[in-house]
Length: 396
Image (cartoon, rainbow, N blue to C red; front, side):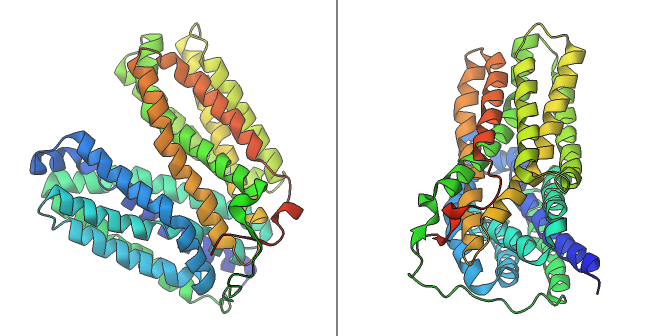
């Protein structure tokens, strides 16, 4: 097998698993109206279930990363797919809101495996020259999963009921398992476990470079949650735009991010990851600052927001490639788990800030907030692994 074919088989297999994981993440939201009717609860209660799912994932990513370093990513991903399938199958049989919440929390345990295991497999088994493309494809698969969830789970739920929707969610794990069977046919070599025990000297969260990376991912998570969740009400508040037009702006922005990720996988091969990240998030900050000017005509505002999405997407593969280079070592998956937990932290905090701004009629403040978060991303860039990372590890 040629190196190119080997690399793309690894990329396709891991990205398929990532696609399924993102369907799992968003599976519950399209079923909210049906679940509200079934259990007689409010959207706040359903939202708390989703927060619980994300919280469990964020808290367990670092321990799951340690287990991945010990036993290998393939084995953990198989268990995660099976565990998620069983959890969503049990959720489809829930007779109470409490039972549903418990099952969804169990699915969150499985979800904690994906980021550390996926990123470790791509880092260890894809050529360095193709690493940026690997992370770009991985990100695109996640975006595709978020796009597919409402279409598949939501539509099937409307046709056959919410229980059938969750059963379909469980069944889709079979797609991930097939991808892992394909991955298992590759000669990846025997996993060398991290048996260093307590001899590692410096916990990663004590090393400035990894704290900055955690903050970088938190800023990206906050940008995602704030822009996707509050762009429409912000546009309605600050420009008198109609709902249909604001929805078009958001859809175009998301499409621009997708295009940016695809382009970012190619440009990162020619630029240093830190430089590509700087150009992307610096450009995004400039665009959001321009968007905060309320006198902009709508066609120009549309163009500025699209360019902001494109620039944000361009930076995503470089962000992941940068982390992969910094985290190389026996604790690589644990580092991935620790740092990528920042995404969940940012996604939880951002609505707590953006929501009240919109409620107080300060929707226009969303754009300076996004500009500030984009500038904050520049603080997390690192040109290359340094002596700071030597002997890194997470606490055992």
